[in-house]
Length: 167
Image (tube, rainbow, N blue to C red):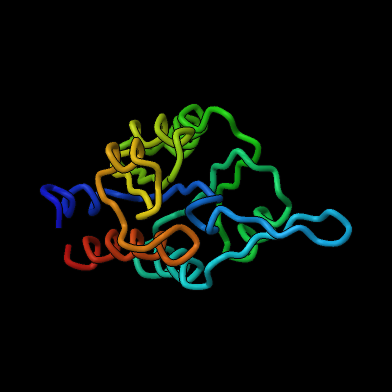
């Protein structure tokens, strides 16, 4: 594991994720009536469940998109924080930390694009999928081997769980 990553992962009490490019593969499907459909990885959903049940770690989504399918997926998975249509993700991350009385060092963030950099710089631990933009990879504490929508969130969740289970 990267230097100091285990200790930082052990301190995590909440994981916040972007949606498009992390929980999805960044693509959309358009239906005949113009509806937008997104494909989510079931594997990533199990990561949310395992964080909650094995370590009591809360989860949240902070995304610039306003798709009803994102809210529906968050509800199905029991994701506690779901913030759609957000342009300043760092401000929302700070608000969540304040409201939940969590230090920023206890919040992990995973994102894939330049609009995630502010939140990544505040989080105690940050990651990105393997197919994230180069600027995001340069900022990430951990670069997943999996792509967005294909298990990157689950990989990050398992890294955090491994640190919690060892402690």
